[in-house]
Every structure is written in C-alpha cells, then in structure tokens.
Image (cartoon, rainbow over all chains, first blue to last red; front, side, top):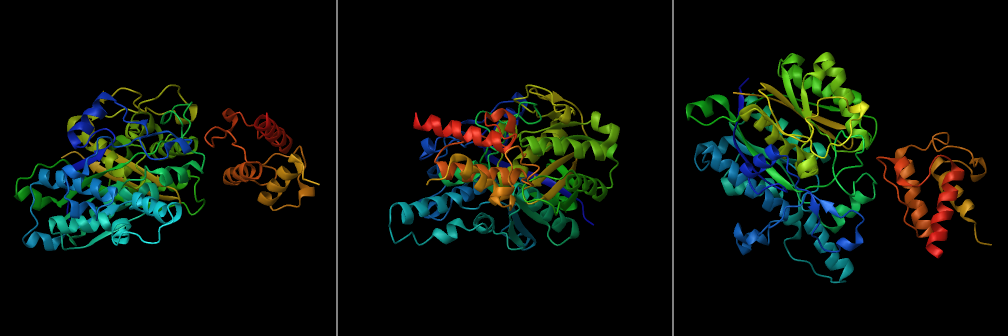
Length: 402
Length: 88
C-alpha cells in the first residue's frame, strides 16, 4: 500500500475564484450567498444562491473552447489549472501514462440542457448546436482535464448526488494507494444555478428562502451553490523525491449505502461510513479533531448527522469540532465535498477551523461544537469530511497533517 | 355538480394513502393514514395543481409554514382559506 498526499489545490466558488480567496473567506466567516442573477428569476420562489459572480469565460478560454465547455467544465478547468500549477507537475512525459482524473458531478452540463430545451420547446426551433451532447455529458469535464494536461491513465466521472465529490476523491485515493496510478486529479464540479436547475429543487420544498444556517434551531433549508474544486493526489514517495510541498495526507475512505429511503438520511448509514473511514485509516476516534460536516441546513440532515457523530465518537463527540462551510458557499451538490476539502486542509495546515456561519439558536438535537459564526485557531492532526447523498449513499474521507 | 374543496382534498389524500375516499376521516392525521414526508410534499403539489394555488410549505419546518397539516380537516380548512384568498 502506497501513501497518498495532496500536492495541489484549485477552486472557483461563490467565495472566490481561487484557493487563497476561499481560504481568506473561511477565516473571515464571510458569506458568499447572494441574490441570484439568472434568467427568469422572477418565476422562481427561491431567489438566493451561492453563485459565482463576475465569471468571464473569455478571460480563460478561446471561442473554440467555449463552444465545447459547459459552465461546469469551465469551472473544472480553471480549478484544475490552479491545482496543477501549485503541484509543479507536468504530465507530457511518462508520468501522463500513470495519471488520470476522477471527478464528481451530479448534473453535468445542466446549463446546456436548460438552454437547449428552451431552444426546442420554448422557441420552437427544430435545430440545435452540433456540440450539445459533448458539452452536456457528465464526463465532459473529466475528459477536458485529461486532454488539457495529457493524463492518459484511468479517468471517469462519478455521479452520486451530494456525495459525488467524496466518492470521486475516494476512488482517486484508492487508485494511488493501490499503485494503479501515480497521480490522480480529482474533486468535483457543479453548475446548476439556472432556471431549470433551481426549479427542480424548489419542487422538493427543502430550500431556504433567506439563508443556510446549519445546526441552528431556526434553520429552514439548504441553499444551492456552484463551482468546482480540484486536487492533485500524488503517491507520497514520488512527491517527496521531487521535493513537493505537501498540503495534507489522505489516510482513509469509506462508503456505505442506507438502503432505506430515496431522500431521508439514515443515522446508521452515516455512522457506518464514519466508522469505516476511521477503520480504513487505522485511527482511534479520539484522534479526530475536526469534522467538516455535510451540514446542509435542512432539518433532517443536521440532526441525523449529529446523532451519527455522537454515536460513533461517544464522549469524544463533545471535544471535537464540527462545522459546515455550506453556510458560506452554499451546497454545490456534486461539487460540494471538493470545496469543503479546502476547509479540511486549512484546519490541518494552518490550524484554523472554518466556522458555521448564520448560527443563531442552539438546537438540542445538534448539541455539538459547531464552531459558530467565528473561525477558531486550533491545532488538529486528523480531520474527516462527511458527505451523505440523496439516495442514501454516504462517503467519508480521513486526512492527516504532514 | 362540481366537487367541493373538501371532496377534492380528500380524493388527493386518499390517492396518496392508497385508500378509498370514504376511508379518509376528517379527524385523521397524515401519519395515521400512512403518508410520510415525501407523500406530504407530493400531496401539496397535487393540491396546488388542483386548485391553482400556491401553498406556503417548507418541509424543514412544516409547523412554521402557516399551512396547518395536523389533520385532514385542518388541511381542508387551510386550502379553503387559500382558495378564498385567491378569489378575493
């Protein structure tokens, strides 16, 4: 078994168009959720989101690229460029043969579906642009990463709703750990903030109209976000031999299925995933200092997640810190675990725990240290990142300071 | 003759509960009828479609939504209120 370390990170999300800006926002406890700026907003009952503002694709891509890149691919490539640049790796030679990309996305090219349904249904046209399919397909972003960086090993896309990124990063971790690949680009991306993408979520009646307030008694639902985060997962000896700056080590991963309900979370399924990640990393529960929560701000998730953490950690549940950064960047659905991994790296590398902002009233059913409203300095050695998807598919990662 | 609000609401709830409308009693709770949270969200959608109204309901906090779902009778009354409001 090889050791797996992270040697590069990149992101774009509602808080910033890069890692440094996102980390600064986590430190400040800044909220990136704003009024939505999208077409036909007046027909939506939900008017807020963690939207990426001032996005100018022409600043990053040429015309031939833009006709092929849905927004979720654009976000992915921007984040991947930042991550690869930080890692200092080049894949043009033989390393490319031992490198691939595994990405998470729930919806893929949702904006492309939305725009082209308008063309044929609303505008009544009978012809669409020739690149609609290669633009909207869920694997488009992974494929464009492989092309841009010449990654010629195993690449694919994982779609497990809100756990897509964690499932993807878990697969990348296991590929490098097993020796199947030497380097993997991994993470997730989502660009669902368009009329159809929000209208679909409205139907479920779980969205907040004013704010995402995880763990707070007066929480009233989730807020959608958009963006991407990409990481370079590299075999430890390879990274050490070239003197790479190691951001953190990935030490464990587990996934479970609730096998019970298509939307309601299960304490047992979540707890088994957390226990599994600890077991995979050969950790005692007491080693964990911080958990980046799934923490969606819905009534059901937050109390179920807290109950699962209390069950797994016993008395130690009262000593560890758990926060949800969705309060700041919104729920990026298939991309969320990737952006949230940045808060894990911040905790391990800089000893700063990103807060749960918007926290107003304690909930007896969420009676853990949720790091309310203000970031905290604390040295932690091991962190977990939770993701629990609709469909009852759970994925938990464990990371360690290096 | 057109169905009353009560008859229409009961028909929607009965369909969701897989019961005959005659078996849906006015004092029954949705829980007693075997309707879970997903069934409730679907029933509210069906009510909105049937009456062309907008029901204020957030699944995170059904009590705070201002739409009383504590019994079949309460739902009927709440829908009658919304229908009247719309006509006004």
